Image (cartoon, rainbow, N blue to C red):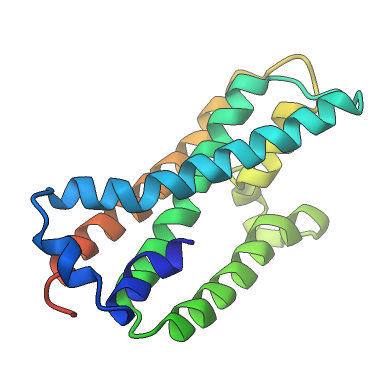
Length: 173
């Protein structure tokens, strides 16, 4: 959904019309990201609900929901950034496939391998934080500090996409 949000409109020649409506760039960006963010968050909550229905113990749900929202914001920021820079939907979809491959590698492979010198960084990976947070009733306050790099990274990616939209939105029609 996100990769099609800008480049798809450029291909369909509807982006120019969108830029002429009396909306601020912020409103246009929010209109592009909010549906995807809400959809991904609802999907995450449905998965958590399914786990609860199956009687799988999941702890610290509010904090877990927050981390899932933050992680979703990062992925949506990357998708929007790619959509802005791509020249075609095919190019955007190819780029997001490569990004998702590397994201999967970064988020999950270190959980099952000895990373040597990189081992201290593993504690900041969102997937590990999710496992730690949701698997026990007692929340280690250090986990909240471990969430800070993910939060900062997500916000920076999203802001980069917003700045890119503002700079490239009108120029790359």
